[in-house]
Image (cartoon, rainbow, N blue to C red):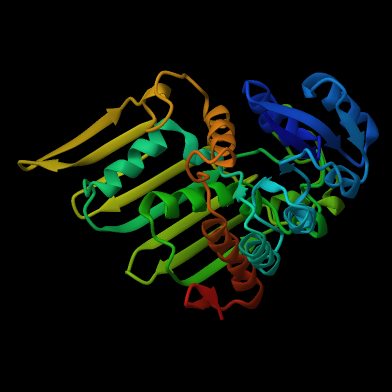
Length: 364
């Protein structure tokens, strides 16, 4: 039985991690920590094992020797601090995305992972979607040929998260780039297996977020313009050493007629794929253009045949299997670090008006 401690019992914990872990038969959530004691108590009552403990200080949770795994589900500003402390306390760590608020903090996490030998994975659960996994196989099998153009698009017409600290630059480090584009950037590089970044050129905007009485999607809440400290949209051009490029387009709010959310496109010399309407494969054969929609069922993933798990459920399952020694985690910290470096380069490029060059996979 794998014993787990949860640090941060807010939205992502209740919407993703704890419900998915609860469905596994070989784990127990034995401790919960949150700066709001009522949230920790509620999580313990709903998801905890009998006698589960609650804390407001994560250091106290880390003192429990039986805990093997800690899930770090806090605002970005504390990802590195808590993850490093947990690994140094002998715990394996699942940290919610992004890896850290800054690339420097992410590198420290990677260093401690290597030093302690404890597992460290980051919550890029999009990889666990069955269609994404099949798309990766298509790429690996050479169906697309040489991939030279990619798009990472996550444009919300209106969808500003007004809860928690999403609008707080100090706590989060940024807006939609670090919140939602991070998933799309991760998936493009994971699908292509390409992490050799050459340069990043970008521009971020804070325009609509300062509009008084601004519109927002139902259920997303409202905000005061003076509290909107991060970008509301951002656009970037990433070049890779092999000549591949990635266009990144993201927003919480932009004047488009509809959302264009979560779509990734990979264009190769033989064919292309996108996720605008499920997984689609396009190209030409015998002088005729084709566009095929590919239906991939959840039980057709490479591992765990027969179980119809959602993406987040599969993500939780594969992580615990890795903890038990059955395979590697889906997301490796070395990969997540490159995502953080790109995100930081986007903000730096926009601030300075310059292209950020990379050397040996590091921005210079």
